[in-house]
Image 1 (spheres, rainbow, N blue to C red):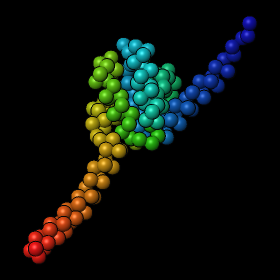
Image 2 (tube, one colour):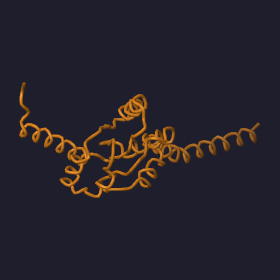
Image 3 (cartoon, rainbow, N blue to C red):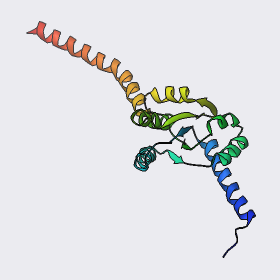
Image 4 (cartoon, rainbow, N blue to C red):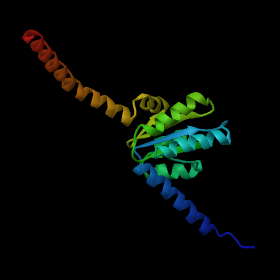
Length: 171
C-alpha cells in the first residue's frame, strides 16, 4: 500500500490555492453562494447555465479559498467563505454570473447569494443582486443601437412626409 507523503499533499494544496488566487485575480466578477439544499439535478442545471455563459463554477475548501484571498489582498471575502459554498468566476462578462445565479436563486430558494468580488472590490449580496438587475451586455447593446437609430429613423420619416406633401401639392 502506497504511503501518502505530507509534502505531496502540501504541493497539491499549494496548487489549488494558486489556482483560486489566479481566478480571483483574472475574474471580472466572482460570486460566492451557499448551495445547501439544492439537488444534484439543480446544481447540474445551474452549472450548465453558467458554462454556456462562459462562467466557471467550482466548489473549494474554505480554508484553501481563504489562503488565496489573503494572497490576493481580498481577505474581506473571507466573511462569505463559511459553510458549503460554490464560487462562480467570470473573466469576460461582469454581469453574467450575478444575473444567472440571482435568477436561479429566485426559482430555487435553497441557493443563497452571499457576496463576491466585482472588478477587484469585495461586495455583499445586495451589490451582487443590484448587478444582476442590470441588463445583459446584449441588452445594453440593443438599447444603444435603438438610441443611435432613432435620429436616423426620425429624419427618414420627416423626409418621407415632406416628399408625400410635395406630391400631394403637385397633383
